[in-house]
Each structure stands twice: as C-alpha cells, then as structure tokens.
Image 1 (cartoon, rainbow, N blue to C red):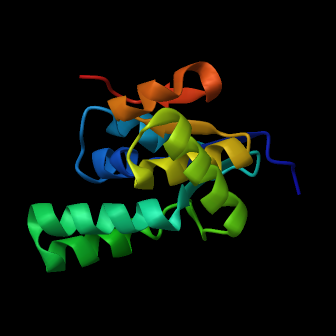
Image 2 (cartoon, helix red, strand yellow):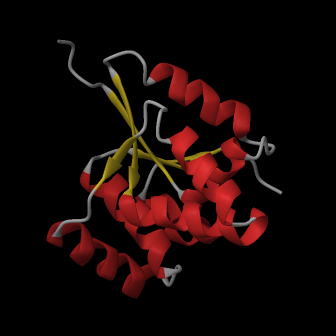
Length: 139
C-alpha cells in the first residue's frame, strides 16, 4: 500500500460549504476526489463533525441534518476521535491564538498530523504562519 504523502484536515465550515454548494465547495470536492487515492488523506475531528451536525440542524432542521450527515459519512473523509494529546494541543492553541475552542481542535489535529488545514473561517488568520492553511473561499 502506498504511503500517505498529503494530509488535509477539514474545518467544519469547509464541510458545510461542500454540503451546501458554497463558494469553496469545488476545492473541497477536489480534495475528496484526491482522497480516493492512497497517497492523500482527508480528516476531520469528531468535534468538528459534531459542529457540522448542529449547524445543519440549526439551518435546516433535524431531518435535513441527519440526512446530510448520513450522506457525508459515505465520503472518503476520516472522522478522527479526540485523544489527550489533541485536547492539550487545542488548549495551547486557544491560549496562544484566541480562536473559538472547537476551531482549536481542527488546528490541533492539523498540527499533530503535520497536515494542511482546509477552511474559509477568518478566525484561523490568527494562527499566522504557524499552520499551513488551504483557504477554500474568502469573503
């Protein structure tokens, strides 16, 4: 089996953008197509997956949220559980960069996996050049 050479971590807004055909959806779609090949991995923290679910529920109701999450779960997207190392890294990022706590988990996962964070959330600009970021859309 080929070694993974590129790893991406999706923030919740990247998944929401994809699910709702937003301005960055095509970039996310291309990453997911790449993830069908063994050299590319696309990840999301389970906490950010929960954020996708609750935002979908807020925007369109429970049934739509459950249907959309079920559909998204068939994508080549690895949902990563949270471990102590990631919790501590998220806490560090929260203290140093002052971004929303749930966003810290996406950043922590990206840092620990030496991955590129995929987002359009301007809060991540506060990370500066500490993390490689693929901006999918910027308003």
